[in-house]
Image (cartoon, rainbow, N blue to C red; front, top):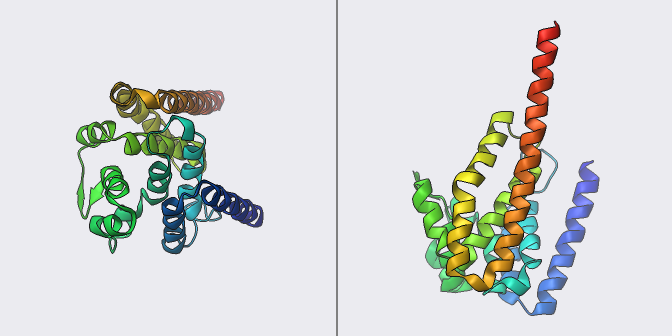
Length: 219
């Protein structure tokens, strides 16, 4: 199984490199290579390369390209969105020097923790709703997390993730969509994706709970 996942990952990585070269998105290409060097090892499932998360979020962003104000910067930020939080040797100014202020600022907005301090959730999502790049990347990031949390998260954590979508993500979409109406197609696409994913997760988890409850009653 791990070999199949690795082969698929390598193919997707090669396709992404070709896409970025073809678009002459060299900043995004550089961001991908940087994250490839820093995200080593496997994810919590024990078989998926860590880089696959950033690569997958970036792949989703590429499908929204016609609807984005800053396509290359959005893709680059998708690759880099966990860098400051997970690799403390990297600072905001380092990203400014290498990728420019627009990408660095978006990554800063996406970063939930600054050292040991975590941003308050309402303020965090409010700040993202005012950034055309961060708002899109965060939605794509949650879409990937909902897709891949099976077998990794507890049932309660899965449902908590779904509740967060209702409480924070959908209001963020409404605010960002009003502020950046030219990105309407991207927000609408991601809203539908999250709505479908959360409905499926809830239906599945409720079915499992009902089954376990029935099994317990029959014993």
